[in-house]
Image (cartoon, rainbow, N blue to C red):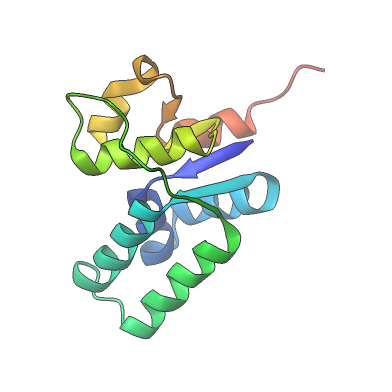
Amino acid sequence: MRIFLDTNVLVAAFATRGFCFDILQLVLAEHRLLAGETVLEELERILADKVQVPAVRVGEVVAFVREQAEVVAPTEAAPWPDADADDRWVAAAALVGSADVLVTGDRDLLDVGSAAGLRIVTPRALWEMLRAPRAD
């Protein structure tokens, strides 16, 4: 499965080593991680400015994500009139990268939901989806 992790999921994965870290590990082990240039720029800024991670560590995190993910750089934002500009770029990257699912805690993106032509779920919903028993 091609899984696009939004900035807030990646920040939580690297800043807290909690549930979102488990999600990241699962995606890396069993699926294809997708990321967008906008997400990587936000990740770098938030880790440095808000979480106050040292610059060297921020560089390591961004380099790690670049190495592990298929990084997508759309040429235009998704045409969602009610969405925040950054959200439109995140969605565009997920769409251009042919993501099966976009994982986010961003309420605005979650509210767009399936109307956007993209499956958008919370980290918990992804976990449940990936860990649900499969009918053979």
